[in-house]
Image 1 (cartoon, rainbow, N blue to C red):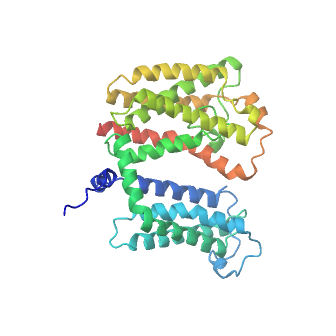
Image 2 (spheres, rainbow, N blue to C red):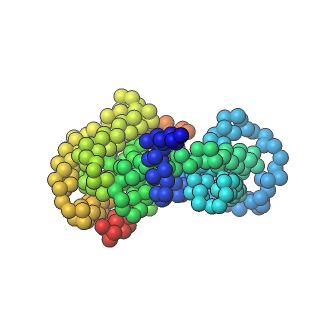
Image 3 (cartoon, rainbow, N blue to C red):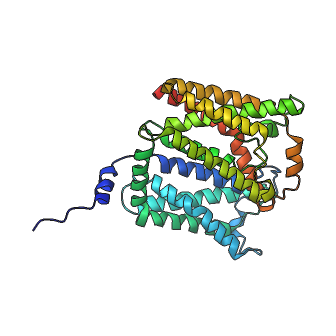
Length: 364
């Protein structure tokens, strides 16, 4: 009796299984950075209270707690445990990756709770440590049941959509981080690399409508070219670059619109669509379409130049008083930490992307 023929899907999964992808590792590092930021924000007011950083372990049951807080702590560490276990999948045995991820998740939570002892705006808690560890453990357990299938499908999707270049996974994480920066409604559209709020630098150019219009347009043109060429470098050759990039920028603008509608006011959902933004998107789109016809090495070089030019211009542009007036009614509330994260990501994104472009240019 002949054996049944395996399904096409199973054959594809078996074919792709040996493929290595570093995407889970990069995502685990990025998510760990997110956890650190959320746990220690706003990173100010550090002081020695005279207490041991480990005193919270013997603090008994916390006086103030809610089921919602417990659920948030568990859910926040569940993806971390899953990604850590997936990153450690090459460890021998079925349970070793999950157990190692549990220990790493618990260690991260323990270190962050201990550091919160020196932050007056934070209260370290043994209950937080326990719920975080539980979340990491649940995420790690998921890899035992579904981790292998998830890993294979991610590798299959990467092979189909991404170019076969080294460090493509890190580039994909960079693109996702750039999309995250579009959730900050107070920044110029596509603007990144503004360090003035971190270094307390006064804008060099005083506000004037004509100069602001020109600078805003130039920033959007430069960043449209830079992010478009970086994204194109990551796409597989069989993909339609024009269609894929159009969909990508529509996604970015949709994120920007949704963020403004939810965080500020639905009536200001399209506040980003200024005359300078409209002209910048049009000019940037036309120039990007032409540059896509150039050789790969030249596209990488132009992406770096556009990225550097956009970063310089965004640090010269004065704040728009009309946008400041519109955002004056913004009540950040629970979004304060999240908004700080998006602004921080927007500030440092070019300084992560530029070294990546340098490495990418040497590999191509």
